[in-house]
Image 1: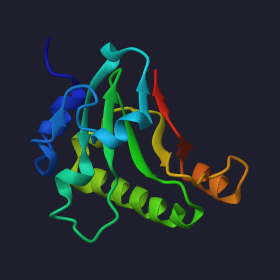
Image 2 (image 1 turned 135 degrees about the vertical axis):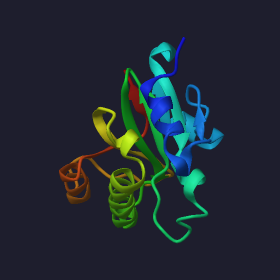
Image 3 (image 1 turned 90 degrees about the horizontal axis):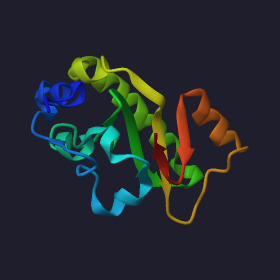
Length: 151
């Protein structure tokens, strides 16, 4: 089987060219429970963007993961779910969008899944669905959930 468009895009992006992993293997062990997949055959691979670029963007709020599936891409941020962290996640999204446009145009060109940007909440806190924070995140296109299901 040939390489997926996702794998080609990752390998063609200098800053993350060696970070491609098959399936969900790029996700840290502690983060794997934040993503569920109904059919592993739909997976095109994953990349830990945060780890791959942390030296270059050490002081920036970096997004965690890109996951390719069904010839689309979804960006997942696994992050504690406290309302005080909303602005951090907003900054991470701003960073991701700029990085995709300027440094990862091949990855940016892959059709985005719906939802494209997901905050997988961790910890005891929660961003409640009807809260002003959840509404603000929704206007930015960020879905807030405990476990993101890829289908």
